[in-house]
Image 1: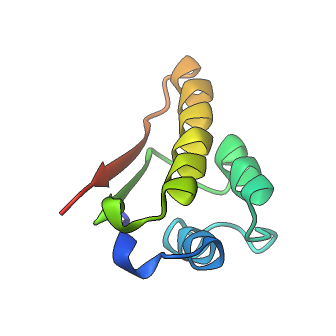
Image 2: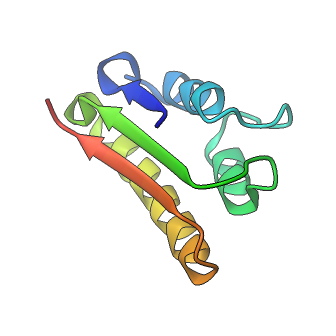
Length: 93
């Protein structure tokens, strides 16, 4: 499972860049909230389940963590309808 360390993701640009790298987003990924939403809604670039673990998630600023959870939750709801496994795990350490 792809894993990110929340202690290294203290601002929006670092978080979004790390998500793009770790989840192997396509080249067109723009590194912004809208692009994250689009990539997670499409998934034609990814086969199988999509899972992500963020350790030290309590280190993420509240606004970043809130936006991230909201975007992942919306995508998870869409993918649940088709039975595709999709999850974001946040672990505080």
